[in-house]
Each structure stands twice: as C-alpha cells, then as structure tokens.
Length: 121
Image (tube, rainbow, N blue to C red):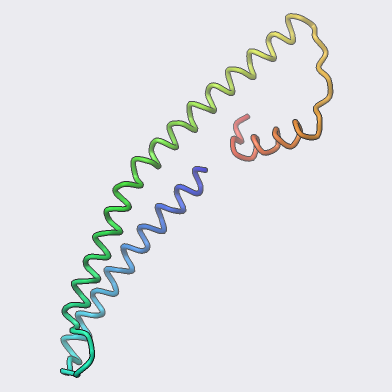
C-alpha cells in the first residue's frame, strides 16, 4: 500500500511539473508567434484555464497528503499489533506445548500475502 501511495504522490508531482512546463511553453509560443486568427480560442484564456487546472491539481494533492500520512500510520499500527499478536501466540504455544496443525492452503496463501505487504514478519 505504501508503494502505491508513493507512486500516486510522484504522479501528482509530475503532473504539477508538466503543467508548469506547458504553461511556460504556451506563454513563450504566444509571445513569439501570436497571430490573430478568427475562430481560434484566445491564447490568454487558454493559459488562464491551464492555471485553473493546475490549481485543481494542487487542491487534490493537498487533500491527498493527509490521507497518505494516515495510511502510513495505520499500516504501522497494524504491523505493531500483528507482531505483538504473533509473539503472544508463539509464547502460548511454547508454554502449553501445543503442537500446531499444518496450515491449510487458504492459510498459506494468506500468510504469503501478508509477508509480501509486511516483509518485517
């Protein structure tokens, strides 16, 4: 999950950078090659629209950032709780000399998925 959050954050940063570049190129093209053409949209209006789009992206990013932080905190809490639970189970097993049954296929699959998301286990 953390990798997806980081990837999404990078996508927002790239989009912001791309919009800056597009705006710069539009301004440059308008200054160097502006021709009054009937039926074409005003280049100044296009730049303003581009600025509005950039503003929307920044707003989305501002909303996304706290969610990403919260996801990382939740993942950390889940990892800590799960790790404590597994330690307690192991201690109980040792104290009671209980022999565990082999894992079912479903349990094996779940364990592998958990390990792939939480390599510290």
